[in-house]
Length: 490
Image 1 (cartoon, one colour):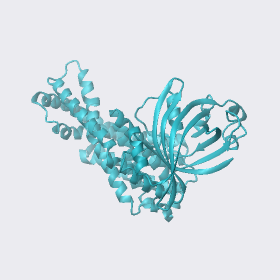
Image 2 (image 1 turned 30 degrees about the vertical axis):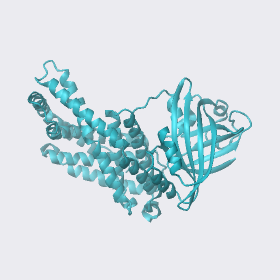
Image 3 (image 1 turned 180 degrees about the horizontal axis):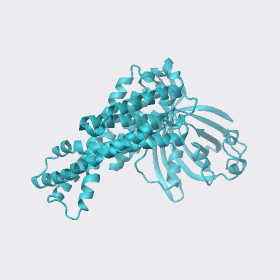
Image 4 (image 1 turned 90 degrees about the horizontal axis):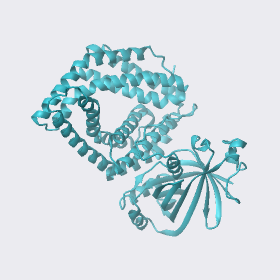
């Protein structure tokens, strides 16, 4: 048995573009082969829950048992030759995860069959294995196609992977993906359709450094961005727009939160491009919110305002155009470059070798959260008598506190962190409702409404403004409940 750290990048690529990638790659020895892999798990998915994949791969008459775990650029990988067709409890890495009973219960979960074109190349002082996979993952009666480009570091510095990816992306659209073949198989077996990806909880080791805490949260956000961009390229919709925008803003907030830890020559460019990405989806998101929170309830009113149908049609037309733009953004060269550059900076940036990245995460997190909470309380003071701009500023502070509180929550007991985050979220939601009212005028002004549609919009805004005092009171109450909450980090 051998154990190692697999350092690899994976990209989605259209089958018609795989040849262009191979033609653009540095010269090297080529190989082509059929790979048949059977992935195993227990009936209650013990391995999947532990973030582990276990497969038996057959190629050229040999069977290899492989277990992988971890996230980010580098993952643990254990391999051993296999005589039979199925793994057993004698595989040492499995004994750390599975009981004897679980090991005996392992069974095939799904299959992956691909044709792999492979080339070992030398690039930027590194040795890199380029693999182009085309085939399918199947589980039961369900089948999903695979068309991927993988770059695996065999020797040299990991930055070479990103340099080669930038070069190859000039010749074919390469979309960075954080979903492994095992993750796709697990989703297929579970019957999950292609849908918007919500954020997952950030899992942190209690002894993590500040640099490791930043990387974990950044990887989480980048994976969410990549997954929702893939949805938008296939079928643009409001949920994927929202979740991609949330992920981009989470990562931008992380850059600000960890600025003293990660600021280096690459910091400013990554931050600026993430700001572009988040703003690129603002119009689509704002129109979706208006349609869902204003128009849909209006349609159900016993006596809707005159001109409502004209307003509904105008907003629907604008939403369609904004969704198209969102899909184009998620397909653009700028987006593809951003994902390579941001991930490369997170994984190999100069900040990693600086002293601030090595400080313990818990005291850094406690100081940061104290600062964020104090800023929010100061900005939210006398909320009921403040103007829209001041309440918007309080909303921004609430959002920053929430993202930081969620990101650091794994360093303390989960239930305490969840209770605190829940109160921040309630405040953010209340302030968000007020912000929607404040920004509706500029949103509608960009639609060039007909007189009938403008009349309906005015009537609906009048109704929302009438409810504004109640929303302000609810926001102030939510802020008071947060002030009474026990900060989970103290």
